[in-house]
Amino acid sequence: MIPNHSHLLPDAEAVDVDSIARPDKPEEACGVFGIYAPGEDVAKLTYFGLYALQHRGQESAGIATFAREKVYLHKEMGLVSQVFNESILQELPGDIAVGHTRYSTTGSSRVVNAQPAVVATRLGSLALAHNGNLVNTVQLREELQKAHCNLVTTTDSELVALAIADEVDSGKAWLEGAIAAFQRCQGAFSLVIGTPAGVMGVRDPNGIRPLVIGTLADNPQRYVLASETCGLDIIGADYLRDVEPGELVWITEAGLASFHWAQQPQRKLCIFEMIYFARPDSVMHSESLYTYRLRLGRQLAQESPVEADIVIGVPDSGIPAAIGFAQASGIPYAEGLIKNRYVGRTFIQPTQTMRESGLRMKLNPLKDVLAGKKIVIVDDSIVRGTTSRKLVRTLRDAGATEVHMRVSSPPVTHPCFYGIDTDSQDQLIAATKSVAEIAAQIEVDSLAYLSQEGMLKVTQEDTNTFCTACFNGDYPIPVPELVKRSKLMLEKVVV
Image (cartoon, rainbow, N blue to C red; front, side, top):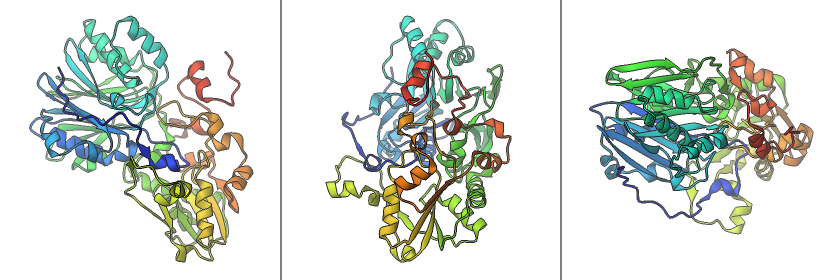
């Protein structure tokens, strides 16, 4: 039995501001968090961890805690701060907690699909939080249905949880059963799994999505798992290391144990985590991503210089690269757009007038900064091209005499199958148009993208250790033809 203290929202469709003007970039992945900390308020620590990871998903949030054999669960639609309050957190006791903040990639945005996914087994319940996307979902679902597993949701995350339960119920222990289940899964998965015995942190053999390990500052025997280091920082935890591709860490009262369950792991971290998804204060490769994004901007200025009066960035994700561009080019950096950082989900329909100028709900120009100026505007990506033209028109309406756009990533020409919500290929503007045609469509005086070589060079890492499929169609994990056809509209797929 799982006590669920949720007061579920009606199954109504919320109006997201992004539905008025969806950003010209991929939508977020998900954020996962886990903690093993007897004697600590694990629910509250998980709440703050999810709060720091909110940028990774804003559709739903949930926390499951374990007190001996009993699991407590609360999950709802909405932001972390909307889903939880002090009284709800007090009803989530225990020494172990698993949390999740979701952007849907498989399964629609409904409360039944919110995570953690909780499944009963012969050894007690497990609670699973998943960041990523499986590519063998259809096959795995059929296997589990034949095994008479009870599928409740439409998510691939539930399938992973049920696969573990299926293996455990066949007589395996937690570790043995989990590893057997992961070997049945193909695709991207960074997982935090709570059980009555302990917490697991797991990454797929390519480590496409990130997952880090930390320890509580005042007690190094208390461990934390999070999608990014910013989830550790907020609760004062110290970064220990990353969970490696193809690794399972098992955290119990005996401490942290490591198991390398995949035979031939090959690191392929999603490069978009570094360009855009992860927070700029999160650390990867021993430096903040802010520093990497500065280098992207410097490289972009070297590759695609332009004469202009000021450089501005598209808040917030384009700003570090814009600063880097300004540093390398010598053109002054300025703030030209102010972001309303409190815009989120709303159930109120905007008026038609607002819908037509929906960008203003998010970004407002500083007219006295822009008037009479030749402007370089830097963004991290253009995916659909839907809001870029509105943005350019806004700058011109504010008095800009020239608008030159520079993008700190290559053109996005292929959809993602590993946990990012990109459109089908025919909706990706760079898949159907040349750079010159895109420039004409979004009405800029000039447009240039960073080269793939430049993007990878400034990582200062082995360039073969990143997934760049969205830029070149080189998918590190084979994608079944049926799944490919759902998004690769422009490719000749051989049946």
